[in-house]
Length: 352
Ligand SMILES: Nc1ncnc2c1ncn2[C@@H]1O[C@H](COP(=O)(O)OP(=O)(O)OP(=O)(O)O)[C@@H](O)[C@H]1O
Ligand SMILES: [Mg+2]
Image 1 (cartoon, rainbow, N blue to C red):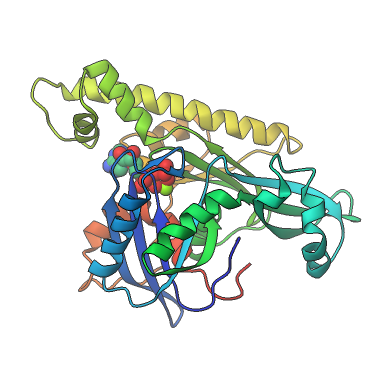
Image 2 (image 1 turned 90 degrees about the vertical axis):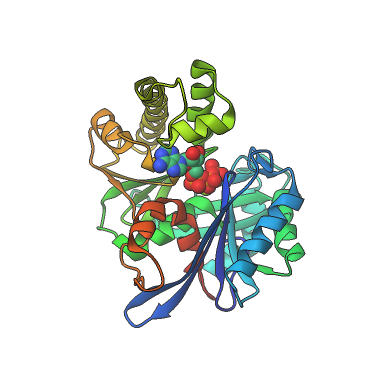
């Protein structure tokens, strides 16, 4: 994380299509859901992960926080995209403190940006299996300018962004709390959003490979618009199963399936790249989440193409949800949209 939490926080995920808000309470034996909210953003508010129209973003965050009567001013949020670089590197064994002192210098050769222009963070994974004099480290660098744009949104809403995380690590957090890890098992988590897919491969619970693929739900809409001659709004409508005069559901389904196919090819390419760069290790199981994971047949298609089990990641799997406050059917339906926000809402002081 680039900034760390002090107290209870509200998790706020600024996605390119909508903003999600989650508050959890640490109850006996786990978490309990306290607040859940989502509100759409206009399509041009966030482009290529960059906040283009901060006024709209501020307004949506503020309305969400106010309408859900969120008391805390402490927000946990996250970023992703080209302005964020995540690298697994090897360094001689050293302590956390030594690493802290030398990170600027060590990072220089791995980061394609000026070191003075980035916020840096790292996580020591442990000694390397083949060379115990070396340790593996996850290095994270995010452009300050980019992080500051996100920070500014929260400040304008009168909030303190006490945690600035990375989307794929927030998902990892939500996954760990809901599923746990098997030693040495290699699982991939993919957050399938509107603009991008965040891939994170974990071995025994530790991230060993991450990659952002710059395609997602928007590609479905673009294809539907192009091939069926619809507006952006109508494309979204038919994609989600709505009916529009003169548009045949089977034709929509054909476009959706083609888009799923190219999405699956991108996933396959990432997994091949992971294998090629990690002594031929293979992903054994895939969990998908994010809005696009709800696309009909996407889970089944990935399963048949990748020839590994594919499951939907349920971020509320082990979270207590009071049925008097939240409709279980609604939670089930919108669950995949909230994986990042749930992971963020779990962040507390001392997290690393
Ligand atoms: N039932 C569904 N079937 C197909 N697609 C869906 C469904 N529900 C949502 N989506 C799509 O999922 C996407 C939104 O997902 P999500 O909220 O995870 O993205 P985001 O966080 O806004 O985007 P990003 O993370 O890429 O910035 C949109 O493209 C939306 O059309
Ligand atoms: Mg998202």
